[in-house]
Length: 145
Image 1 (cartoon, helix red, strand yellow):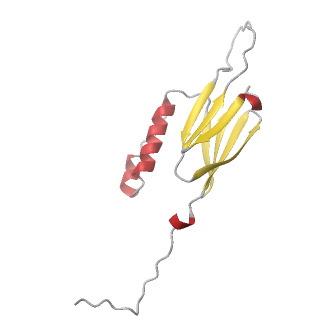
Image 2 (cartoon, helix red, strand yellow):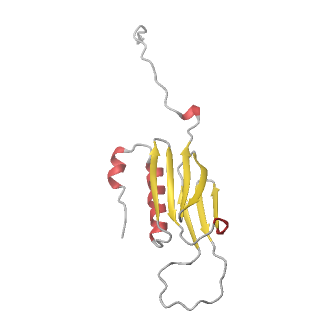
Image 3 (cartoon, one colour):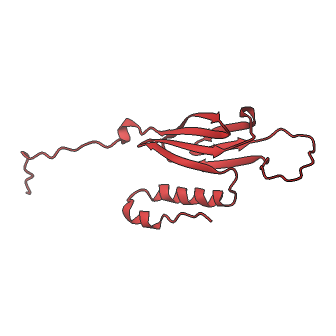
């Protein structure tokens, strides 16, 4: 089992409790099913990529939607006639995988190549919420009356 314990991060992440709780909840939801397998990669400070192994799925059999802060990837295979397998090791089942996205994360695009679905994400923080430097005024004395 792959579980991630975010407890040590709570000590160092002031104000990020909601984000860590969302990550834990998302991890718990996805722990029940490991299909299809996926990777999450941070490419730059605010750019991410989710790569899913969707071998056997055609582009028209995949659907990617974003609803508020949730990314939903669905795969639905067209029904085929009954086949007589001697051994079946390739999963051909339909799937739905949900990813909880942080605030201001947008899906920028997706590409299917060599059986891997790449979904590119970018966090676009509004200008009003970006950090700004506060200058210390050394010439102004505060007088206590």
